[in-house]
Image (cartoon, rainbow, N blue to C red; front, side):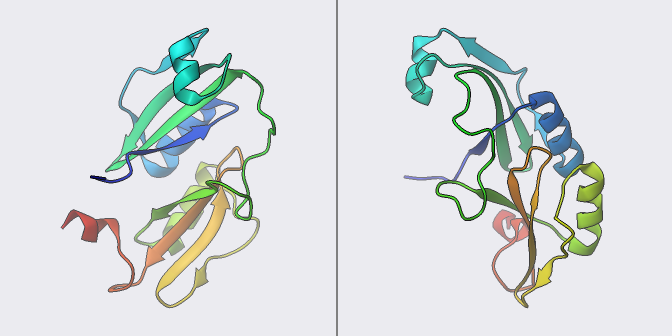
Amino acid sequence: MIRGIHHLGINCHDMARMQKFYADAFGFQPVDEGFGWSNEPMMDHIVDVPGSAAKGIMLRAGTCYLELFQYSAPPPESPKPQRPHDLGYTHFCVDVTEIEKDIPFLISCGMTFNDRDFVDAGHVKTIYGYDPEGNVIEVQQCAPMNGFTLDELQD
């Protein structure tokens, strides 16, 4: 039986910078002291990457967890993050309560929106932006009685 999604994993070029961004922008705090591996057959098996070496840390904000990784081996096939139209996991979404105030705050933390403003689609106000390494983050504010918000999930 599935209980829910536990965490998102993000591979970073600069894990310390990304940890600071996610702490400042969204309040994510470490839940462990960090971890790492090199020349570990068990980890190569788990991540399905032969010859892998990485460090990582698990962060938490509310009921959401982020696992940040910084691999030192092997090098990535592409240094670019996924875009919304690429195959695979391309973004995660944060639900906010005051998008008009939250976007300027996120920009002050290092997020970019390519000189665009959010769209009010009636049932949701939403926009895609980018963390400091270019990973896509959707910022949304659901209208009352449309979709769901984290407050409704906790009731």
